[in-house]
Image (cartoon, rainbow, N blue to C red; front, side):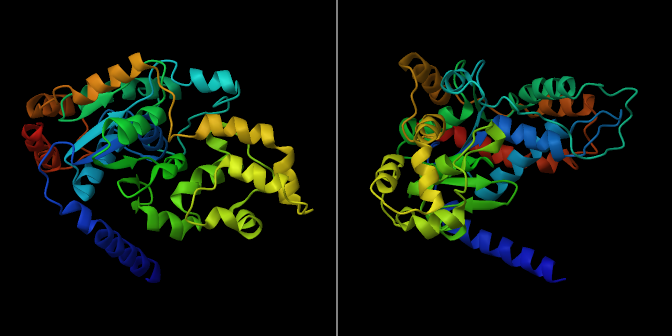
Length: 354
């Protein structure tokens, strides 16, 4: 009973948190932009969503993605939504810096489902590939902007769009990747669809005890297991705050500031000694994890600009419904006519481009 009360209180608090943003009047297509980490959202959906269609095929990646984006649009009320996927060989730049980057990443479904394995694909990777391909076809029928450019990861593309391409827009980055928290400022926020939490500067500070401007330094030290990036031994959040309080102050405390701090210290605290010994790891992780100054070739920037500034697709409701019925997704998405109304709202904003 208490847990339900707590969840209700958290949701009410979240609605209060977003109320000011979502009720601002929209006068331009790019006033309030939701930018979705496509692969992050798909992998999470594929792993945890138990949906199967009427033929017994697992469709959790497809259905979960569509439901997550639709729910987020309903709650956050963006004027437009941009879905960003990794381009071909998107990890190449970071793998040149660190060949083991993402080397251990595997995707497996974590839930047992009542799937007829006689008709479902035996190979998880094959199932994922099929669902991803079909998902793109569904997204092309919605008033969404799809961006995927060869040679660049979604993280960099999303950072470039929010930091450089749309510098006057209120941007919300949808992802469970904590690396995006380094970008949070007065204009940019991060939406965690799993926590149903919108991270502004205050929310980052309250949860981590570190301002968003110093989240990169924390992430560099902590590492990222999901990307196979090791950090500095013993550099947990509590230890950092205790022994390096400068990281909690509302002023920039960069990786270089960190190294200067420990090199000028004669303390024998184990954490500080570990940081001194790990300067190469810190410098490498900075190159792998920083998003404020993404290194993107001009020709790649032009492709991203073309995708974002191009004509916004309109909602093709009939084709979406035809695909939906053909794929027998009725058990995963109830009452399609009502469900698709949120995309009708987005479709109306297309006329504000100008």
